[in-house]
Amino acid sequence: MTKGGEHRRISLDDFRHEALGAVASTNSECLARARAGDFGLLWITADSQTSGRGRRGRAWASEPGNLYASLLLIDPAPMERLASLPLAVALAVHAAIRAILPLEALPLEVKWPNDILIGRKKVCGILLEGERVADGRNALVVGIGINICTKPEDTVYPVTSLADQGVSVSAPELFAHLFASMAEILAIWDEGRGIARIVDLWRAVACGIGEKITVNLPDRSISGYFCGIDDKGMLILDRGEEGRMAIAAGDVFFG
Image (cartoon, rainbow, N blue to C red; front, side, top):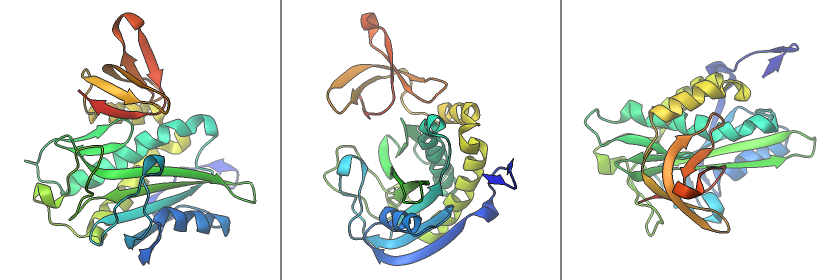
């Protein structure tokens, strides 16, 4: 952010929060606020969603009791530095869940780029959506759904909930941790200037480095070994004799 012509990092006090009941989608609520001129750093949470959505247009089950939260960011970074934002968001969610998870729990890890796994089962969905609003500003919404007491059925990935892991926590309590951790991580990310630190932190909690994976792209599937991420946050896939390739976006499956 800039203030008085000088760059400054955001802090916890810069964020606002509005808690709602049942909504169609917290992401949609944030985009509506952006169109109405909101200046961003606004969290919207809801008790439930009637039209929650995940990546690639998938429906996101949104029963009461889980956490449904979206953060509105306005002009969060130059376009060339935005690609690392999903890594930062994953770190913030990881930290929030880590804060309430017992030490003896199954491993809490991040699957590229931003799926949060407990014991290799997905516990959180994250969806980033962007839109240029009428006044020329770029609105970006970070949507986060965390399975607290229920989990979706018929998913393409194995899934779990915090209740499955023996954790009893309310959505407001978990959100309080997320509110704090997101402010801390976005300050480190610093509009993309802090990508080196974010990449280091992400690698420390990454899932499956060195393992065989398949990456589903929009037009094909590619298999190889997950070599980690490069300094820009792209996935590095080792395809043996065909060499290594960097992948900017895709769905990762292990094995």
